[in-house]
Length: 192
Image: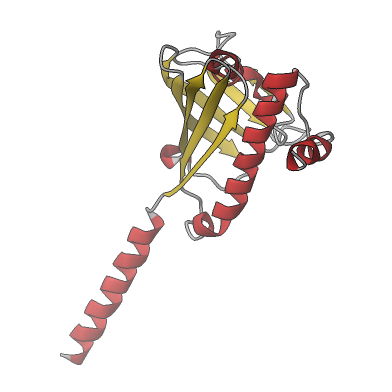
């Protein structure tokens, strides 16, 4: 009887542990940008393969299929270091230019602990008035190992908030963002 209780306890503990590994994490960040929604959409939606121009952590990016602009099925690779050993490949799906929204499905990763099958993001640009919009980014992800998901959440949120600021700067000034100039650019927005 005692062995059965122990076995049941360990079985339930193991089951709970395996179930916990299936859990995904969720982050939502948004930024109000003093630019028309169409201008923000152009950068995040239409110039999908050129994210390196507006993301401080993406060293280079390019389309990986026959697409040369954002659209349903467009694929991009985002290199996170110079030698290309750390990257994310993504596909643009649910592309809806009328409503300024799309989903990015992560298809392959190298050198980062995301599980592609369970990791995706949605972009939505919301017009607030003729000259102001809000960029909303929602990120669903699972890490491997799973326990890293909760630990990485704060870091991911900060990186995504920085990305939103970088998009604002690129949209409003046309100045490309990179790791070398981002800290100085960020200081400009902190004093506003």
